[in-house]
Length: 167
Figure 1 (tube, rainbow, N blue to C red):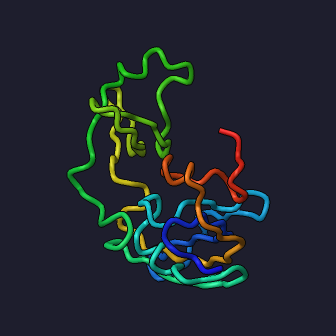
Figure 2: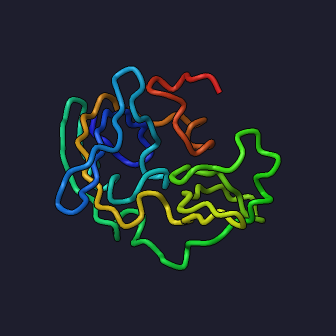
Figure 3: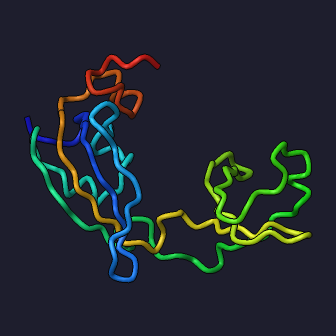
């Protein structure tokens, strides 16, 4: 069966970024916990979905996604300061440089900020997506694909490789 829109796809992947001409390992899945998603509903980077469309079980493919096709270029205006008072009651105290902070805006949208600097007055954070400005290189292997169930389609996400994942 080939991958199509509204199919549940399970695949193994390895992700590298290309930085200064060098491949840098980012993450990978494994057969026990493959990446499983509903294809064609906006859960994945559109270029990623284009690259795997029409593949079948057992197919392997490598491809590159440019920053413009992924998370965009870094926006220098997305660096801001958070007051240290925000962290006064936090059990771990002030976050270290490099920490990823889960934040949400006034509309309830969740996002992640990366700590760039810690001063006595402020925590300087980068609100860009951590992969913004990076070229992504994927190596994938398709493990399974099947049509989504009506329940998965109504929920807008996959319920596991076999469609019976508890939720």
